[in-house]
Length: 111
Length: 117
Image (cartoon, rainbow over all chains, first blue to last red; front, side, top):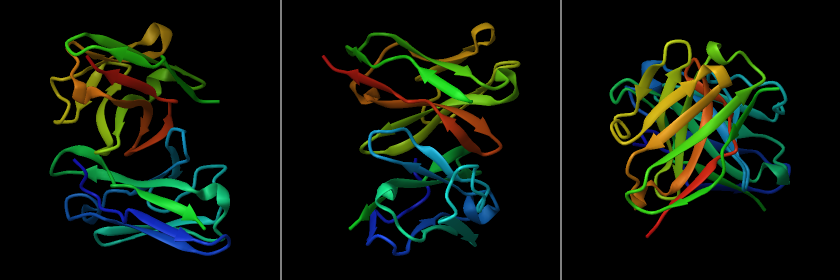
């Protein structure tokens, strides 16, 4: 079902900047549908991190930012913290399959 | 505070039926769609279905249409997901989600469903 591709893992030292890509197609991201990002910390449910391509819900630190261009999107974490370690998923809508699709997920490791 | 509180973990045998629940609070239940997302180690996160509590308008993912049934009880602000005949492949974590625009802004704590003979 996954129509959005992410790298399996990224890592960085505390304080560094890491980015996670999310590659879609012309039936989802490229068609103009919004991209959202979720953070899943170990043993917990996913939590909305970024919505509407670039917006942070109340309470999300500004070290998390996101962008979208063409058929791809990316999430950046600047000033990486140990508590950022977990899994990150992008999500959009796909008009071809008529469903909400998630990315394959990326595990962020803080070295 | 928005909360989605799900019923507990379940262990069932293949062929058995199951209905899990999600109690919503802290917001107007009839204003938002509510739905379910499955998570497995192999397939990751998969959107299953959403329902609009006002009129029970439903959208199913083609992958889950016919396999599960989503419903709500507005009087107790609770959403449900049910199976008539479970399979081992239904073993997964199931999350209740509040749906707004094209995203899922609140998630329940999850129901771990294990189907094994």
